[in-house]
Length: 409
Ligand code: SF4
Image: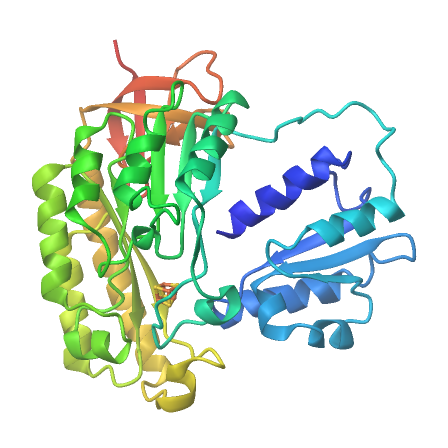
């Protein structure tokens, strides 16, 4: 979501004549921020401290993103060298003020008329109507606002014209999407987007187990363009903890989604999020999560230790009663378990032919990209390949994190 916001603001600035450059040469530094965890918020403060040395009267520092909703004008009080605090998506006044200060409109021709890489992020929902007790997102991003289906399709079409091969439809809870003009839900939207000529791939994230519908899985299974990957956070494998988190589903329901998804698409990539050490998580509750992770065989599990976010229900009304050392033990235990699962799952790709959408080159100058199931893949001995090309690759090596392959005949 933050990448989509950064892209959107960058496109506005590039259209106004600005160029991306190193901090040393730049006139303007913009921090796009995340506050989902305390560590992310702390990084913003540390960056703002660092920027003190950079600031001069001719330079501008701006902050946008979730911290603006959370901290607002406190930021300028705490960091007097900060020039602008820009609410998410509210970029018109900010760009106009910059243009009044630095006029680049007579400068060199713009190198990026439409700034689009191989993948283009399209926000289809802003905000979230859920109220998970640990989560600060509804407070900083507000209630859901849905972008009309026609506008999403138009943006995707333009992205393809500008060179994108893949679009990623984004929503905090993307399955809840409905066209405000009556054109249907996420399955209908994905079905329309995938028809765009020239588009090779469609992804969407993040799904919510309470809202994901079978029609969406059917659209995915029937398509050669929609990627076979679900980002489906479970958060806990224990029903009591799920209730305390106010997630709105039980593990039985989650299992049935995964069963349906794998029945329709046996090789689907499955990514989840888990929080360990949530208030009230007993050893037995943790072991339920561990058992579920073992049973589900996820491709990727993002594991976080619970940390209270001020302003959330859990922070104000629940006792953070799992000691830090215990949270850490559960985190490491789950990481070790998942490492083994991921390695076994990735090894199943050995010898198979996969399609890799090339995104760029790695540090060893080898083309890399992703397969339709979401795994990163590196192509060895490929010759000249440009980002955006799709290569058929035979997998010859697999690690927990990625596949290595050779061009297939
Ligand atoms: S669904 Fe829950 S965890 Fe996800 S953004 Fe909304 S409130 Fe946060």
